[in-house]
Amino acid sequence: MAENERVPGERKRRRPTSSGVVLSADLIVDTARELIDTQGAQAFTVRKLGAALGADPSAVYRYFRNTEELLLALADRLIGESMAGFAPSGDWAADLRDFALRAYRSALRHPQIAVFSTVRVTGRPHEQRAVETGIGLLLQAGYDDAAAVRHYHALVDTALGHAALDAGVLRLAPAQRAADERAWQAEYGSLPAEEYPVLHRVRDHLPVMAGSAVESALDLLIAALRSEAPG
Amino acid sequence: MAENERVPGERKRRRPTSSGVVLSADLIVDTARELIDTQGAQAFTVRKLGAALGADPSAVYRYFRNTEELLLALADRLIGESMAGFAPSGDWAADLRDFALRAYRSALRHPQIAVFSTVRVTGRPHEQRAVETGIGLLLQAGYDDAAAVRHYHALVDTALGHAALDAGVLRLAPAQRAADERAWQAEYGSLPAEEYPVLHRVRDHLPVMAGSAVESALDLLIAALRSEAPG
DNA sequence: CAGGTTACGTCAACACCGTTGACACAAGAC
DNA sequence: GTCTTGTGTCAACGGTGTTGACGTAACCTG
Image 1: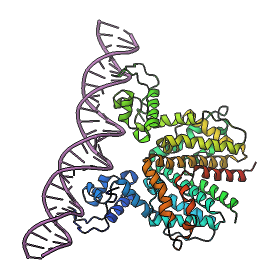
Image 2 (image 1 turned 90 degrees about the horizontal axis):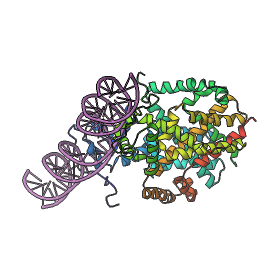
Image 3 (image 1 turned 180 degrees about the vertical axis):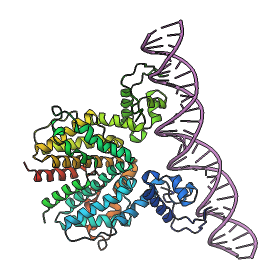
Image 4 (image 1 turned 120 degrees about the vertical axis):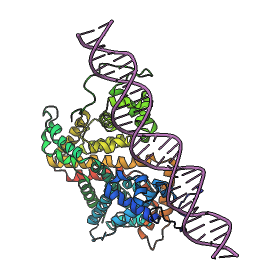
């Protein structure tokens, strides 16, 4: 824990890189974010980040101890952004759904972050604000402290978990994705009724399995929360 | 699609490796599985797999086109194993919970597979059996074809999504994990009541956020399915 | 305005990774 | 016994994260 932090408060000596850019922790996070947004998550590597910055890749390590630290910083920023336009309507159930969907959508674009912000506690301002808001909605519903925390945890992890899975689909080449979609119809649609009576019966509905289940899942969760709410 | 498959049915020429092992697709999948089980998911690399097999890593490519194909084969095997002891009790709701938890637990040990078997359709026997069983339980509950498929999708993806997240926690070094657990108490437990009234109020319950939310989430899903069931 | 410290950008290197193409050889076919 | 060819091996390519040495420019002191 000796040299725990790489960023000792303020930078004094701001030497530009060979390409003229002046680095900073913020700029690095910005660029990383842009890289992921435009090129996809798998395009994020330290070396490509360096190239995008116009700097040697190893310069990043002057600001973050490793890529994990960098992603952690990016995570909190994204949490903040995803909750930026959130305005509670007063209907706690609808608000919770919106809250969870925002988390999902943000995580979907940044899958590395999704797993991350569940796994690690950023402990940073945006995360704290979001947790405050989310648990608050459940208290508003009439749940006691323990239940509010437990249900918040279930809801957020479900949203982020679906994001982690769905991000995997987006990562597939479009051709592969189309092939898999067809597989639900072709391979599953033609199974013998004797051996697979259920699959045979529901065969027309199987292609929906290729899409995301996040809304179905959230709807069920919210329905349960609504019917169990003490208030 | 010309050389779609690497494994053309049967192998005739079974030449042992330099270490004396006779390779086969099954042996490779077995070894991969063992590697992940004993060393953790991040220990699975083609090169380590080669070493564990006592063969040159590139020999794997005689049996699988790439690592993705190999993982796909492993995925179906794991689906089979996880459902091996499954015995429906007749209580469809309880059975669904068991079904989902089996998927969760299996995926938790093999996170790469978790994302995978949601993303890609293996189209292999074990997968088909599992889907047949799961959707069957929802039909038994009285849901119509479309709803049964939709709810099955939501349930399974939720279980696997939580597995993907929770696997990230397991991957952390124990020290890091303990530190994060304490963070929920330390950083979050000491927030000022004025600025964070909710977090201040529920501070004693926050450490549960460090654990898995899968059971809470599944309980809510099952509760919703139970109360919405037409039957 | 001169000199000294040193933070920080750069470079080269290390140890990994998945994957491929050339090659040699032994197993099976005839 | 000879031929074909499947299959294990080897070396190499281009990629990855990360580290340590190094020089220089930016700031501080005077």
